[in-house]
Image (spheres, rainbow, N blue to C red):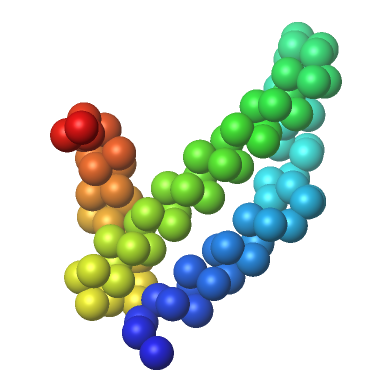
Length: 89
């Protein structure tokens, strides 16, 4: 088995769970500061979880490409740079 394949499998399994990856208390603190729209906070939480999950998945692929199992800050930076590149279509 290649390094990181177990981590990729775990990421895919956790992303299919219908629960929240981040505690709601973190987002409810924002609502106490003046934003009273619950639907907006739920949308914000869902969008941030999707972004972080995708970024960490791409980061893990960068680490695997470098023949490492552990992700490093430089992997996150590379994944973010690749996401910003325009596609050649």
